[in-house]
Amino acid sequence: MEENNENKEITETDITEAETKRRTIKEWDINDRPRERMQRSGPKSLTNAELLGILIGFGTPKKSAVDIGRDIMNSINDDLYRLIEMDIPDLEKMEGIGQAKAVTIKAALELARRRAECVAPPKKSIQCSKDIYDFFKFELGELEHEELWVMFMSQSNTFIKKMKFSEGGMTNTVFDVRLIMREALYTKKCAALALAHNHPSGNITPSNDDKNITKQLKDACHLMGFRLLDHIIVGENSYLSFVDENLL
Image 1 (cartoon, rainbow, N blue to C red):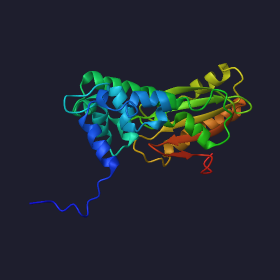
Image 2 (image 1 turned 180 degrees about the vertical axis):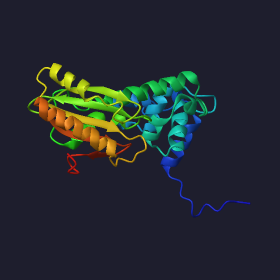
Image 3 (image 1 turned 180 degrees about the horizontal axis):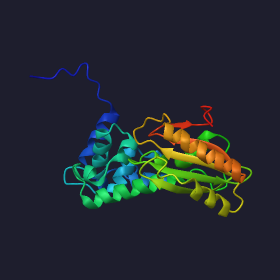
Image 4 (image 1 turned 30 degrees about the horizontal axis):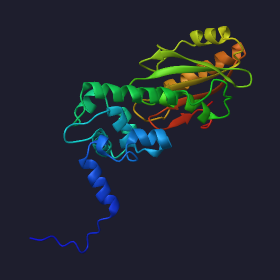
C-alpha cells in the first residue's frame, strides 16, 4: 500500500540529519563535526547530545558517539539535572556505553558539580539569604543524608570559609555549639556566622530541633560578640531562610 505523502513535508534539514545519523562522525562534513565546531565556534554552539558525544569519544558499528549521546539525552528529556543524578551502572545500561565511557561521563559531571560550588568568589560579600544558599545549594541539595555547615564571615559580611560540623542527623545530640564558637574565635577576622543544613526529604519546613539549634547558636554568638546572620535549610531545588521567615 502506497503511503500518502501529500500531507508530509520533508525539509532539507530532515534529510541532512537523517544522512548524518547514518554516517560515522569521520564521514560528516567537517563543518558538522562536534569537535571541529567547538574549536571554531566554542562549546555553546553544541547541543547537550553533541557535548556528551565528545565525552563518549567513539560509537558502535551502528551508531556514532553523538547518536549515543542523543539517545541518552532523549531518555531523560534533555534534562541535565537528571543526567547528573545518573550513576555509573545507570549509564552502563545505555547502548554503546561501557564502564570506561560511563566513568568518563561521571567524572566530567563531577567536575561540573564542583565548578558550580565555586560560583561564589572567595571575597564575595553576603547581602541576602540567596547569597548564602548559593554557597551550599550544590553541596547540600543532592545529599541523601543531613549535614550541618557553618559559614564564617568578616565584619563586612565577606566570606572567609565554611566548615562541616555534623553529619547524619539534626538533633541536639550531634550539635555542639562549643565547637562552632571555638572555630569562630580561632578564625582570623571572623565577626559573623551563618548556619546551613539540608533536608533530604525536600520538605524545607523547619523542625523544632532546627529552631532550638538556631536559638542556641544565636545566644552563643550574642554572648561571644558574633552576629548570626541566618540559618538556611537547603532542599533539592529550594531553600528556607530563618531571617526571611522572621524566625531569627
